[in-house]
Image (cartoon, rainbow, N blue to C red):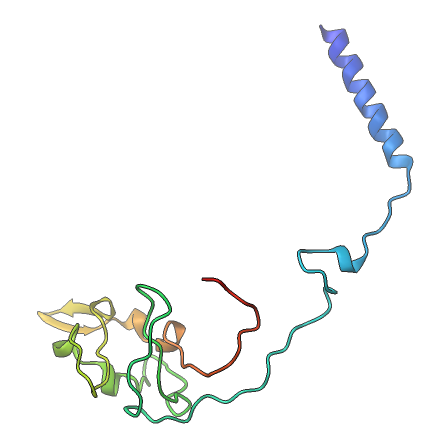
Length: 149
């Protein structure tokens, strides 16, 4: 049995050595990856501007899927950067008393996931302050890549 294993290993090693003597052919750049374009082509989106709507001018935008964070229907350039010490979104959206209520014409209150209870009061969870990590402003721009999601 040992002789058979040693003989099999020697034959496989021999085939490997013979295979290594052949010249390795390179792969054309057009055949690399899933795309049939050059790996050096970088798609660039068309230049666009975000709508210059002030808060309160548009209604609520539709969500992309069930449970998706609400989209921002107004300009945010004057609110950026959002930091722990400077979060202008809170001036309108930090309304724990209106949480979960649909109030047409009023800012959408933050959901319960954005609050913690401290001393019997709901206060903003400081881990949720970077609003634009989940909530994004919208622009009417064609996607770079199509999706059926």
